[in-house]
Length: 177
Image (cartoon, rainbow, N blue to C red; front, top):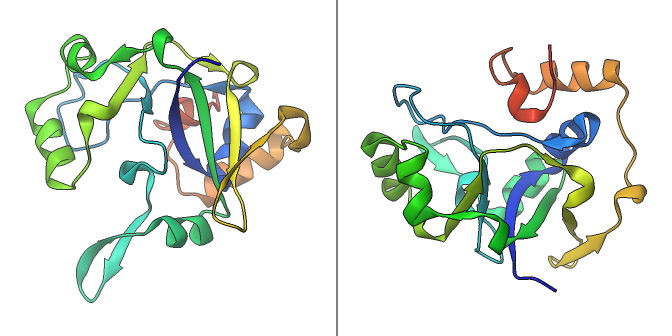
């Protein structure tokens, strides 16, 4: 089997990806000038990608949730695998996708490791991805696409609203307006 890169997400966001049938491109949301080219992001990190963690305030300071905290808050964790040889490595991607130096500095400040990242400029059908769920033993477990229930359009729209997404982020999660 090919070496896989992973797109990490939460269970509640995976429900929306399933409803659309696609893992869609997005731009980094780091306060840049929105000149970045939309990318489907992956990492070669085999445990978890810090940028997929939830954030919040703790004792008046910004807190990045741990893997276990994100698992609880996000109703589970899911990772989607895709062959590394089908992706563009960071050394080329950041230039081609016009990732701003501001965004790159935010990545580094937050202890993210961009050189482990890869990506592509096309949406990927969920059926083309390897799906793994973080189980109760804190291990990644492979699952077949057919084992997941798919939300109806109405349920997906409701979940989309519950998660606080604006119409600008709808394409990121696969919900076309």
